[in-house]
Image 1 (cartoon, rainbow, N blue to C red):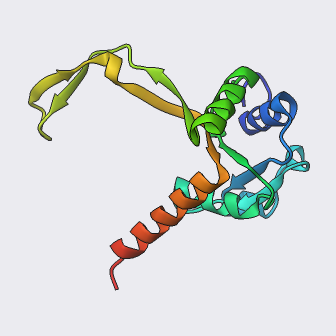
Image 2 (cartoon, one colour):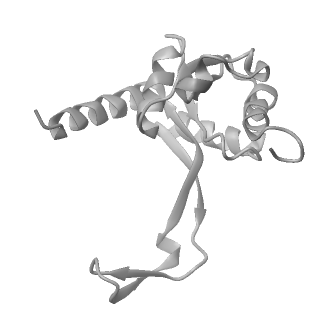
Length: 157
């Protein structure tokens, strides 16, 4: 809850009321997907997956074939602005994909895998990835196919 409103509702409302999407797909844990809260009546519900990319893949399969841009957003970020959503979409239109990110403000250290510091990474080179993340539909389709292929090759018989 955030100020008496479920965080998921706030997040979904940002997309329903802000940018004007043709459809909103929400991936939920299996136990919630079978009986979603009523404030999700105007969205498409899919069951989430074991990993984030599995949830994205499940949601992607539910979007309309005519979709051109797909926006992925974490429910835990309910204060997303319409302006940030729009900038991310514009970036995807222009470049194929775009993400929201914050430039690092802290000093970032590099180690050799142990706790021994081996150097300092210039903070102007470090960005913290966030959501929304937007993709041209073909870019996301290809990325999901690559991820699926990679996962299949990594599985043991």
